[in-house]
Image (cartoon, rainbow, N blue to C red):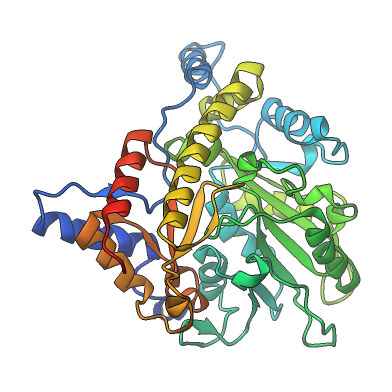
Length: 424
């Protein structure tokens, strides 16, 4: 008799962004005369760079010829793209220890974040920052590692509290006693949802912790192209020794408009070696390669040629123009919310704005409005959609997330509506 995976029944019925979309759809049906400005989901609004379009069209024509056709490609990705990434994202920044053989091309960061749990051992202690991207938790729930859930938390997960007064940066645990050490640590900086960035000395503390305790860091740096402060981390491998304890995940979605094209990559250094329970050494690079060759047939040749074009001088200029555009949107949103007296994080090294009405501190302390209530009020009174903070963890109640990914025109319109909004 077939039995379904019971872990699916443990998750909330709807994924956070699916629930936001459902409520927006209901609102539009009942308020068809009102235009909603979407400042919630992290989709982009600028078109693909022309250099990418040209490369994709050229690759498509190549595929249409007998001599240029490409069938199944290498699961790890074509060497031309992996070498371009190694040079452009690592070697040019002095990180020569990351090479093409360490890089695996994927169809986006979200897929690899979910799939990496395939190489985790049973009984490992998973540490997640709160607030945090829901996939870190949900993927481990589906694999049965989270245990029972109650009040938005899971009994087998270690929660790294990211407090506002600490800039939403998790502190390295004081205790390293057996049974209390985090075996796998998810870190995302620049952060989604808070927009906070991490300094090298802060990340160095986590790398040292992982080295001492033989832990693994999963470092999500999907937003690294938005970093503007010179001391903010763009790659975990900026910290010496990280290549022995960290996997890094990146995406072209938010940097180059690939949300509908789908391409990203994961770095699993060849120097990353752990052990099985019997003590035998295990290369995570080989394990991930084996996993990909079993469950993944690679990203299409046409898409990879498009991604390769991003590493040309023209492509790099296009990325900078796009990220500057979104960062300007975020900066204007940040300024508008600060003028209203709201508490604001982000918008400086990230396109995300993490905010809460902070009038006299009463919403921080008493939380008179829940995140979903604030979502509904902004929607009803200003026709602005946001992302409820509680969807990123129970400790984020009362907060909401805005993004800078909309058009300039819509961002300015949203700012005007926020300015006209009555006191919350």
